[in-house]
Length: 249
Image (cartoon, rainbow, N blue to C red; front, side, top):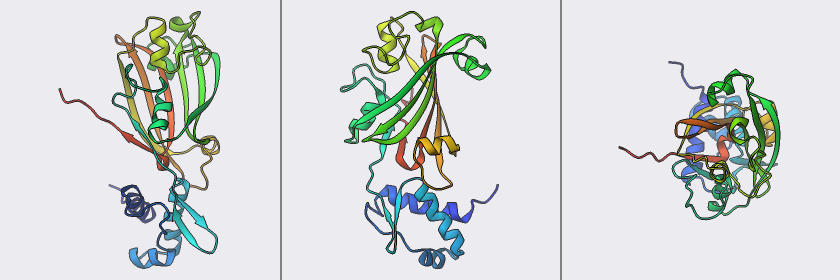
């Protein structure tokens, strides 16, 4: 098994201290010289470790002063129950995530008719080339970009209905929209991976520096076993916490 590069191992330790509160908001990180002494590494390795945290927007550099833990609060994405119909507040899961963090969730969107490529067809259980609604989103929390998503819905389900265009009706969120046309979502599946951000993603999420890692979530909603929507969601690792609560049957 390949050994974790030293700069990533140092970044992981500092990240854990920030997330646990050992290094609270406003705290000053050890200097590059102190990191070199503590871990027995070169200045380049120490600099790279701090660059990782800067890219994740966990810390900010102050000219002539040092590097400090940011005060930005993380959003917590609790997968279990995040789409409950009886949940209080807005019907948009993202808006609820933001509200729980004491922030205001907003989003930009662009919808268009498209056809399913082979990958999307497999995820939706349809034939390649079948018509779908594609919607691209950029989500913001208190005006700061924090999530990207591209969703696909089969037009065989939503075409010609009041919810064909995802953002054109009164209902907000996939579950609420599908409910209005009698399609009752009863399950969703998420597959989570971590990878470096693409250049376009880093630009859209305003991620400074490199490297910047993101979570990618492939999520699909089902109604009685039939896929009714699938989305690829991109979250900056340093600004989101993923929480999964799974019942043991």
